[in-house]
Image (cartoon, rainbow over the protein chains, first blue to last red):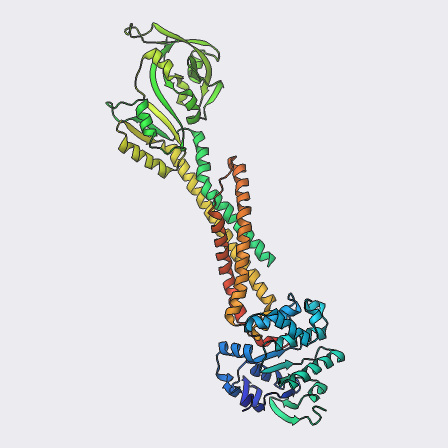
Length: 224
Length: 360
């Protein structure tokens, strides 16, 4: 059974079909890139997979559970327990230090554990910067804090929205290396990106256009 | 948040200060009103009743100690000065100073036997001056028919001015009057009691019931004025406090709404990370209630300082600290803040977590 299955989902706003009869399966441990121009439905799909929105039609099976039928309260719990989010603009709480930002996710999930949060920061190479505020960190460092926060609760799926969109090339490479590590550890990665170079390093690339899947291809060069 | 804290602290200061004044005003005003003279009198209950010092003491025993400011017994008898009949009041001139502090005295209060005070009208009609040795004539047991032979030379220590009927009498100690006219009963006793009108009415009922020889009465013009002024003042304090609390609530609600709007992205992020609505409510309400508590503590301290300042400026006396006001002010501040936070916190729960994915 696939970890994530979208079965005939559509999202309709009045006359506009943001998503139109999407069918997609993502296996456990798979690294999928989703590409497409603005307005193609990437964000809508991310919202639905991230349990922040519901489709107008169709089923979204996560671990066999149809999250399209769950209540808002249950969706919050699923998001908390099964999904890690990485954002283009990092979205760190500006008055909390790096380690405290990681602990925020722990706080809502279970119990804040500073030692574990420090280990997560060490894993992204930021142990030395743990006590710094976001304003004292570079963009690349902030994104790594964001990644540490997304991983701290051991999610089943990591959803990344333009994770390298605000980074220079050096930091982009650092983030992509981290994604490689996560993939090797069998973490399921779904990355929305405009950048073909970021999409190329993924195992599979799905391209959306006008709310439909235009192409779904396995990257032959993956892992080389 | 600092603005909200300031608003709560100011509100709590006004609340604590005005409630302190509200509670203490009856005592303060009571003391003020005591300057306008006695507010209760004892009279004989009937012609047959024995109305003497012992009966007065029996009545006084029913008044709570500490509330009795002063009591002046009066016995009125006719005597003669320069062959002219005048009404002499035998009393305790030291106590009169407390029951009638509004008397203006030219010269000094007579405080010992042989001292005489006369009303302004008597002094003018008989051409008496402070320092004169005045021969006061009264009846004697040996010569009751002409009642003119016995006399006492008394020193005129002061002339009484009140603008009222008090200027038509002369005043001496009870002992001096007894020397002149012999022993007798009291006519009236004037009391100055520091108590509210309800309490005074209670004393009147109690003394009427328990002391047969006395009919106590309230001096209505004093007690009613006191009661009217107090009720108006307390209503004003209540109104101002209520308005200030409503303004505080509006200010806190506005500030919290602004805080929620400012932290909209952060709230969206927290919800995206899995914060439930109840978590968001707890966090923001917790912050609000903490602000309320801190503001309440600051306000209750500043409120006492404010009340003390007002009391000293208006009543020229310090105010009593009300220990219960500290927890009450803190609780009311927390309650007001909690109410003010309801709508902003509810708005916080409606923020869509997806906004963090939209790059807002």
